[in-house]
Length: 337
Image (cartoon, rainbow, N blue to C red; front, side, top):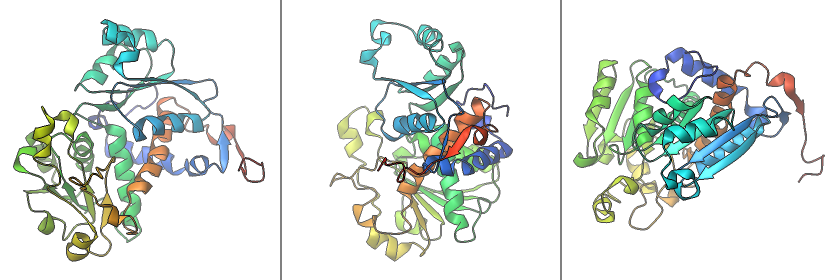
């Protein structure tokens, strides 16, 4: 894949070597994400952060990643504050806003919308999530986290065993992650969901065609017993036709400390793309797991900064210039804290 100047719209764009390239650059971003060094490699560059659907982690993470590379961020949130509310097309919006930015991150509730926008944009566009379709940067940060977590116990992405639990029909994070896992060897995937919320068949078939072993089940306990990773997802209530329909499935698969202790191996890693639903009738990932050292959800969010910094550096072709535009800093001795 040629990163420089490219849109990042789908995991389908990536080969295994591309993923390894992103991870290699992400590894180098640690000192900058931890504020031990400052870089101004994107000094003067502008990110257009366009989020037409609610977001906390993805929006702030992309913005922070760009700031940490020295760039500036301009944000748009919600339809009501844009000309789209007045009937402007995605084409016109893209033509205009790409004149104000050097790169754009976009989230939109309609499948394929980010690709439509990118087709008219004059600058690279990164998909921050398009409906229930894909979320490529989330899949990359998830896989980066998986790689780090299993490596601590001598594991590898090849021969990985993972259970994905919850709303697999509408969960765009698991859609992209499954496509990414198809690039690796001898991976076992256990798909745990209600029948009505199964993983789309085309994604299941893609994994099997790629040589992955895939099992589908609606039984949580037996599916998480022999895996390296349990990846839990919430019910995507915003994708359902009604609140009542979403409530039919909420709380169906709850992972808490007692279930973990009874059925998981001691080093099984727990992941979730967040937000987790902490309401009493949901709790797909219970708060009583917060002190479990294998709960990796906040390490995931930290890794999101590294991976998104890497994507910006690659797309804007500055990955090899980050260090040369940097300096060491100590915020404590500088009196910042």
